Length: 146
Image (tube, rainbow, N blue to C red; front, top):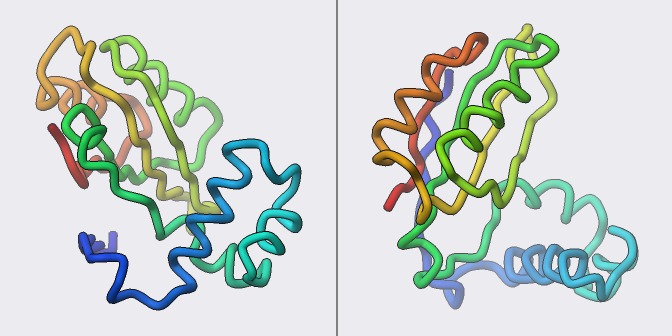
């Protein structure tokens, strides 16, 4: 698995396209846009730019980040593996906010899950260990935790 590095960067130093991708995602989330086409038109970017960056660019909210965890996992591409992982997250008391799954390649699928963890029935480390035990999970890496 490729080691992915994440950066926290001031918005002002990034190309404007990243801000517009986040803006388009917010239009969809808020219901201001009823389709991706409408959201990208409102944000002033192309659909291809949106799809190129949508799974790589996220807004950072310092207040929420204190009670969130984001994990990246490599799963076997088999029915039920993602559902088992999601069920394990739920069983520990975490509230899933986002799930992103890449198209499986060579029988493996890379996913990321962001969840609120302010009501966990255990520690974040125990949650991660529980997720590592789910059948079909090849690896779990914490991108950020509380």
